[in-house]
Structures are given as structure tokens and as C-alpha cells.
Length: 108
Image (cartoon, rainbow, N blue to C red):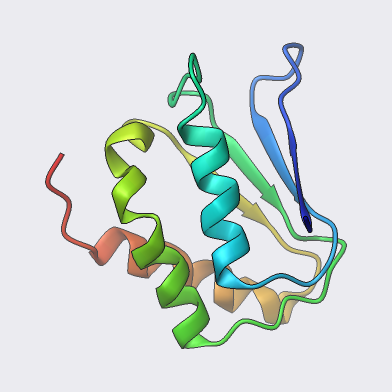
């Protein structure tokens, strides 16, 4: 899988390290594995590290990721997520993901 989840008790955050090109379903799968595991604290921040890959995601891919995570929102309540990018051009995708996620109606 192109996403490695690193839960280090010595770190204040969880890292989702993207190691190769990925598709939306892999992002959703990694989110499910993290947020649905017994005992996971959703208040622990998550860092998505995409700095080692060239992210080629269009609007529909990003929308699919946001919509695919809606079933997890109750498990994610109160948590924070950051997306680390290496290239300026990928910053627009990270911002689009943030804006779409904020705009989705939430009934928690």
C-alpha cells in the first residue's frame, strides 16, 4: 500500500506517509484503518506527508476523497489534519481538499 501509518508514542501526532502515487480509494482505506482502530484517540493530530511523491489529483479525485471520508467524521470529531507538500503546485490541491471538507454538511 502506498500509505504508511506511523503511530509513535513519542510524537504528538500520527504520520500518514505517502510513499508512491495513490488513488482516492487508498486514501479512504488508510483513513478507515486509522480512525476505526480500537483505542485510537481522534484528538491526536494527523500529518499527511506527501512530500516524497508527485501528487496528480484532479478536482474529482479530491472530491471523492472528501466524500469517502464522511462516514468517519464522527470518529474524526475534534481532530486536526495537516497536509505536507514538497511542491508549490501541490499546495493548491491541499487547500482544495481543506475547503471541500469544510464545506461538507456535518451531522455529528
